[in-house]
Image (cartoon, rainbow, N blue to C red; front, top):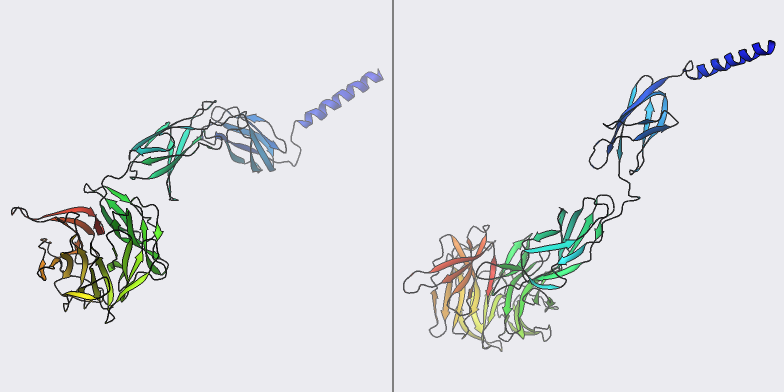
Length: 498
């Protein structure tokens, strides 16, 4: 009987102990942790996510709205963990306070452990090294994903001889049309694909070259980002950039015999003469020890000989001749009065060189001829006030075109007020105005004969010194029908027409 009472007492004691373990001990304090679990991609709620803590608390699962609540969490600092198959486990720190709810939000990212990346994009068209491609070109490619993930594509395009990369992003189809491509230009292109989970996958790099520029007989410059940039163009207004916008290049002159364009380019603190191919490639520095220089770099000029084997150019009061490969530098003339040589033009037969000379401010200008030996043979104009410029011989060397500010105005900024085109005829030694019917308040500058000498081309601009410049083609009156002035290129200057 005694043993029976002993056993009953032990059972009652154990029941009491276990009953007490389900209750809070005296002096302990508790709070609540609640929150939400969402996708890190689209922030939609995630259901059935396992949420628990370290130190241990109750294990709970999120409902259909991604919400969870953990009750009776002892006051203190915890690290809560959210787990769901296919997602990367996320940890969030939490401090639980007495009788208060601590809020947590978990943003779970998809796990890439078992997700395979898309296949490498295969570029389909245009084929690699394709030529004569249109300026509006459709690119196509293929790519697949075994998990059928949503794919996004990015195209990168770069011009040859340029570090500038253009990117087209967030493309959902396997084709894209490029627009506004340049003539005669080689492009590199590459496609990357992303499934939003794995790192992007890159295709191979391919190239294509656009169609050649049609009948680009005009050259001119545009002022872009404080640099002159050389372009070629046609009579329909088509344009092709030839030099980089990052360097200052101006005063283009083409020679069709050697198929080269000579131009001036800033090189450090000096200006030098360079040549390039008609498409802008093959840039070569011609001058070295003696740069081209005068009173104002915007109004300085040089000239080819007819064959394209040599170039003449000024260096202050001296005129130099140099071979197109940079050899044979020779001083052929020096002004007797110290005036600067600003412009020159070499006749087609090589017997005459027209010079425009002026003082250090650009005024007291003269135009005269020298022969190949450097002897003055003709005085064309002198003793006038105002600016003079724009020398150009006819093919038979019997006429010379130039411009002169008839207002005679002179100031420190070399501003011109009424600059018109004039022509000198060697057989009569007479100068006459060309009668281009220039609009009032404007200037006609940089005059050149057309290749057939039936027309002229000029830079026309307002005399305010700040307005845009346009290149205008002038056609004389035929049968009293009136002259024609047609704008070929806007915001452009320093034309050449070969």
